[in-house]
Amino acid sequence: MLHSRRNFISTLSLAAPAFSFSTFLKTDDGKKLIETLKHRQHPNVNASNLDEDFWAMIKQAYSVSPTILNLNNGGVSPQPRVVQEAVEHYNRLSNEAPSYYMWQIVDKGREPLRNDLARLSGADAEELAINRNSSEALETIIFGLQLQPGDEVVLTKQDYPNMINAWKQREQRDGIVLKWLNFEFPIEDKDQIVQTFENAFTDKTKVVHITHMINWNGQVLPAREIADRAKARGIDVLVDAAHSFVHIDFKIPDLNCDYLGTSLHKWLCAPFGSGLLYIRKEKIASLYPLLAAPNPLEDNIRKFEHLGTRSFAIEQGIAHAVDFHNMIGTERKSARLRYLKDYWTNAVKDLPGVTIGTPAHPAFSGAIALLQMEGKEPGEVSNRLFHDFKIHTVAINWENIHGVRITPNVYTLKSDLDRLIEAITAIAKS
Image 1 (cartoon, rainbow, N blue to C red):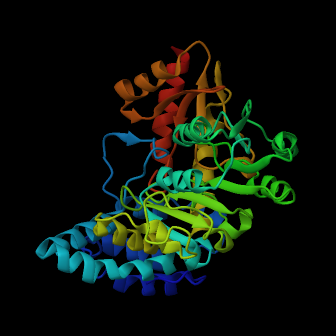
Image 2: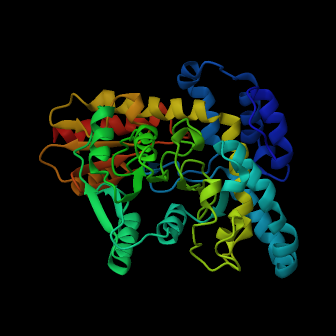
Image 3: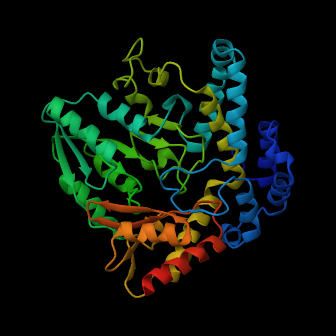
């Protein structure tokens, strides 16, 4: 499996065996991609941002629609062709003799995959469990924590609904106390955010729930600083990294958290229904698994993987997504995503009635941005973007956040965003 390397050509050569069965890499587009990756190393990520030929080759590695412009990658991202082909390969193999190939062959790839994800995330492999999405990972934590009646949990009204509902269920069943924060985003004042969290901490606070990147508008929270304040008080830190993992450039230990959950089918572009659970090693034994394990209080991270029969093809496809991601690199990807967001937002922000409900500062944002148009409902704008211009976005109406979420990805080109800019301009003038 692929190791993360600074040398781009070495990375490519190491990845090649993993892609050996890929028919895409044997096509003209695939061969062009390999040549492009060889000759455009761009150690300066800013130079890479401006190289549209490079990113055009990346786009050819995907099978995205040539007619519908998909700018809702915040929901779920497409997989590059090599990942699609990997899933098909493992699925066909499994179907030759399911109980043999699934359990005795394909399932044996989980430990190498765990090591791949450890190198990518910076965490210890013995702290990582492979599951199906952020909700499953985070609900494993939420329902597994040994909380008592009266214990307090600090969270925000801008968190993801599944997580909010999970905490509410614990409140109803177990008598814990939820302390809600309610932000008016966008905010570019780190101290304001951190102090708001800290002001909610009391001697009864046991857990703080931090959404690293708010899915509604792309606001990035200073997770490490909040975690440091919490840990100083003996408070456990849970991070929802559904939208930040391999989107912005960080490693899990950088956040100083005890628990983290993320979806790999978002910014890693892994197969649909793939996720990652992180639990700090010393916390594993005391956390109950969501699904029963033979010894629920053992200190083995694998107790969180007792899912029964599931798609091992999807699971093994993750490894190929890691390979593809590493050919680009997190730093290069993160810089490009932020560049794309800045490109279209700077072009429309001064149009009459147009505002951007996402921070402009790079420390507080990534690819996701919220378009707001005075006098127009989010649904109206989103519908016009699709019906008149075939641009797929999503309308957002949540706590203090209203607008159209627009989210490019690595296969999005400046020319695609020029189409978006023209559409927004036309709608604003109407």
